[in-house]
Length: 275
Ligand code: DGL
View 1 (spheres, rainbow, N blue to C red):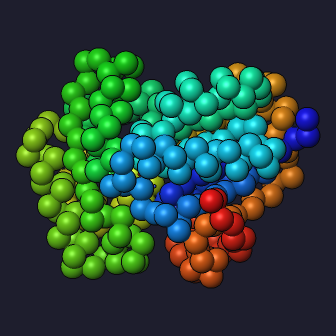
View 2 (view 1 turned 135 degrees about the horizontal axis):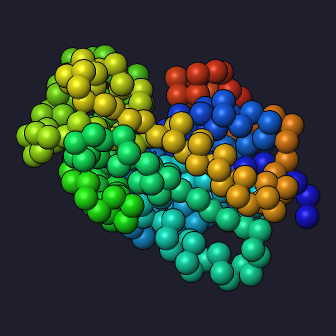
View 3 (view 1 turned 180 degrees about the horizontal axis):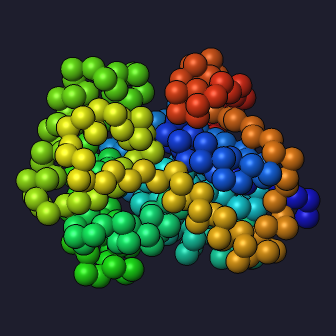
């Protein structure tokens, strides 16, 4: 078996906010990023569709030799990860193939960030409906009260680069008011969608300084670091030349022009068809 990059998958651009932190925290490794832009967004798609698309992506990574794949998308982690881990991976009969998500690492730490024990989760419709955060946080912090709010307009506002627009302020204020009204004791708000960190400034402008806003990039990067330390056989399989390669199922020039917004640097993507 040859050493291979760590696969990072998202429905489109959002996973680049996670990848950015992975590259910062673990710069020695190689990464292979795939955004399924042609079929994004996933946020309002059914369980079956998100599972089917995510599985196709994971198969693509495995066929290219990747051993470790991170679903850097909350919706895919919420709707597809469990089936992939429990049903598909065992069929491969290859203990070197692993798929990780972003929900569990976040759930593992979020309770330590809230002093009041009241956490708000902001995500896509799909992530909220799956109730994955409610279930995962309850496993680690049963005493923490978790309130959810779907913010369906936020992804397109980010993708259209309208984070500071009047509409963005309107929808940000709307959903923040909704969630704080549901639980006025919330002191920690989790941005449980990879796009939302780009709205940070707008979100902060509608919240008191007392409420802590948590985005996932660093949490996922710390968790991957620990994972690789705890699983030396997986770490040994990772190639380490510090190279990151980008693929999209969508239009490359569109990907390249949007990606820097999420990744903080310009990128050059290759195109592929998943089906
Ligand atoms: N990447 C998705 C997430 O984190 C948001 C974009 C989408 O709906 O596809 O949930």
